[in-house]
Amino acid sequence: MAALVGKTRMMQAFFAQWQLQVPRLLLVLVTYLLIARLVLELLFGAQSNLKIVRGLCRLTNPVVRAVGAITPRVVPQPMLTLCAVVWVLAARMALVQLSAALLMRRTMG
Image (cartoon, rainbow, N blue to C red; front, side, top):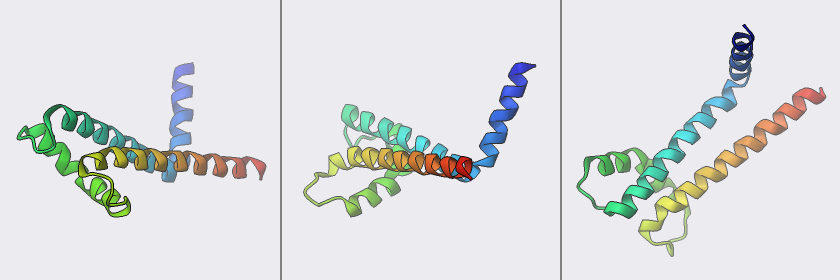
């Protein structure tokens, strides 16, 4: 019974802050996909013919291209995936800071 009450409270907290939880979950998904792409690129090369590498590249190309647009041209092309991981992790940290600030504002009144 206590576990059910705990799960109910967690779901209520999730739905109370859905506008912060949904982006958090999307950033987690993108982070894991980018890390998988980085590992597979290091193992098999960026121009690999494996379907999984091509699929991950197709899924994560919008993020890598966006990072490539704001990253200096000095950074070589293979390092853009690593830069994308760093930028996504920075976005996750900013989201955590925002949620903490909103929680403090809510508790202070």
